[in-house]
Image 1: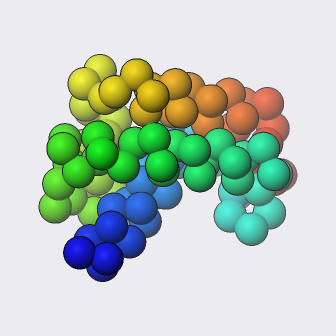
Image 2: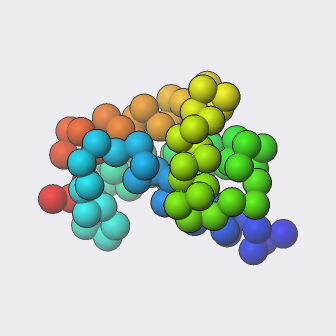
Length: 94
């Protein structure tokens, strides 16, 4: 069960990059705002990821979340919007 949660959170981290406009380099160089937005999205979208994209990982999970964005909870939608905003405002660590 812990492995499945870890894999889900890893897939959400990858999925977060799907909602970005330009690639931002993120990772360890990401601003504190971007890191907070990424963490909030992973936490807010974990249940949606399990419900909508269970068993999918990596790119497949990212595409699943993007394709099902209209079915996600409001908290997940809000978190994804905040992450997009953080990326667009230059919070990606460029």
